[in-house]
Length: 245
Image (cartoon, rainbow, N blue to C red; front, side, top):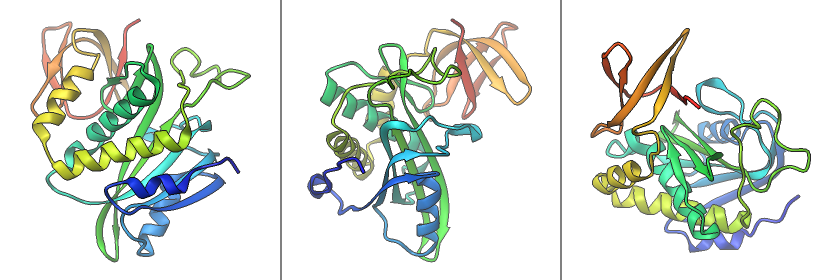
């Protein structure tokens, strides 16, 4: 099992109970099972490897040789809608602090460094005997595999070089700090500054359709505003947007 400094978690604003496993199918799935059994908020599951890592929209998430963790959070009506945006900011901040490299966000919650995706985030709501919670999964690619990334993601996948324990702590620190502060104006400003899609040509993917559009900005709720080639405009609260390279 790879080393992880559990003691470093003691410096966080909330007490975290960490479960470290060598391999699992999905840390999010494992944590949902524990949550239904009544495990406490701020329980963290960290895995060295996921055999069935989960991404947004039912996609798989490559999970070899990186940081893969899921944290159980109390449901808060004030910040729940912005949780994935806040998590993306926390990841970007943590990466910048440890690597010195700029970290940008591809709407909604993919973090990019040097033009490559290095992190993905998945938030899932769950109801336990104690009420409603959020299971937040975060994956960060640490160092490129010797054999390279799988062919299907090689064009977009990247990695960073950072200590796994320190990175987890810095991400969680910023996540807790942002959630506790509840300063959504700050979240909106920083997210808009880091979102690199604005002004870009993109393709909006919805079920069986794909439409070319220009990203014109972000709304107050951080929906993505786009203008299609037809002149029609739309604010996307969720969905998939691909850059036109």
